[in-house]
Image (cartoon, rainbow, N blue to C red; front, top):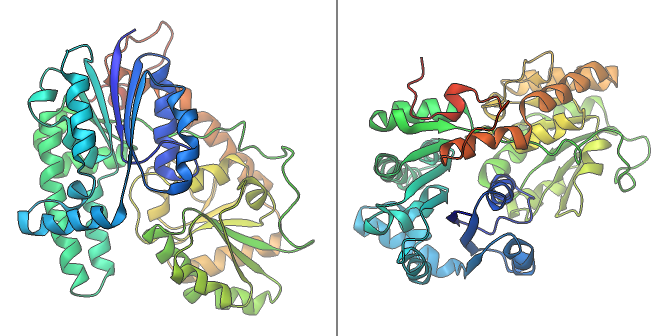
Length: 420
């Protein structure tokens, strides 16, 4: 079996947040086709208990404890070097030495870096003989631009600089590597515009959803909600700035009107590591902030409506796909729907501003049930967001042979093909 080096910016387990969901399913897929050598950072102390589950799929591993204070100091040093803070944040000499030793004898001929900053370990002479793939996932440089637009000066100036420095780095990596991938056609198209010299080697493969796990009607834990309550739910990692911003905006701009009309209505913000601005929202009548929960499914299953009011977003929102897989009505902003081929009004609801959020939420609460929309949402997930099918695109990008009878959409799975 061929050997492959896989580098991730955090431990790809448990699959409880967007980047871990994708990186975990990638690892499972890779382990069936390669002897995988995994190098990654661990950025939360509790993740150390999961290293055995990850190592069981690998030929070898190198786990690096990410010391946040040191990483932030490295990021600040990037300002003097006129380089990307994100890249310096994940720069580690121990991991660099491990990669160098692993590649020294030439047995490893394939390498996959998950997220832009991890490509630095394959940039240079050690990686020149490799089939090098970078899964950028999102166009992170554009995400920093969005951050800059939402922040006051001088933070906006710092973030805009990072957007520019990171884009330079992304262009360099995409030109040096064999292939670059993204999470959706929309992200790949944007990157082709930002990095035209790499357009012929830029492609994408979609995320998926475990539709057996996230399914309506499955026996789950008892409902976490009061009996008979109507509940709106917003899920996600609540230390992630776009989620923090979305929760605050929704509570400030949408929630007062809904709560006035429905005094018993509840809004649950469900997700790990809630930042201080999110925890403060629990002071608002009717708003509940849960923190980490053992199973997200009961919170989705018992909710009247799942909301995704993101104003800053790149890539594909797994929170939207998971709710759709469970047959729930989803009310989302345009940013939250990027990369998801759903038809507003048929498979979910789209709201462009607070007025539309209030209007659609009120209509759902009045009707109490829109099972047809939930059923259509699940059908879309089953059709377009199957992990096994979509990961065939990853295999094609790594040069794995296409199996007989396997359907391979050309643009999605052949990044060297110029899109029409």
